Image 1 (tube, helix red, strand yellow):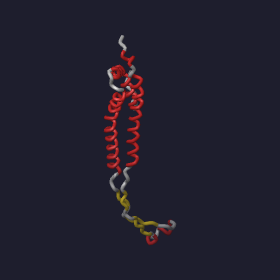
Image 2 (cartoon, helix red, strand yellow):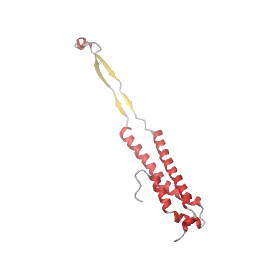
Image 3 (cartoon, one colour):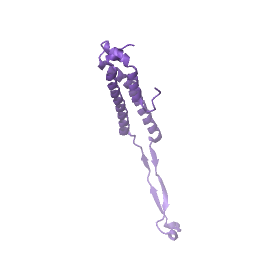
Image 4 (cartoon, one colour):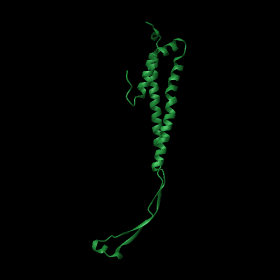
Length: 148
């Protein structure tokens, strides 16, 4: 069994549960409730995932703020406009000066989108844990303790 392809974290969790099935079956046989084992599997998946998701969101926010978060000033200058034809525009008195007012634009940071990305990542981890718990239930049969 080689390494799972990139982007398959659920596969590694399920493979880990299946690989440790004898250990989990021994724990169940010794009296440890399946719910306790299930919570430990959940913690093993969520403990590194939650800080990693938070760090990824913070880095994404800081990169967005660093690239586009500074207020930018546009305008504050004038230019000449001629609304007539080429012959009429040759006369400098036909040109009209137009003033472009100064505008300060502060980009909005995507708070809502960032929250949805974080929630989606956390939901994906929870779904993966749920699938792993299904395999845990199947893998903790007492028959897994047979020797020979």
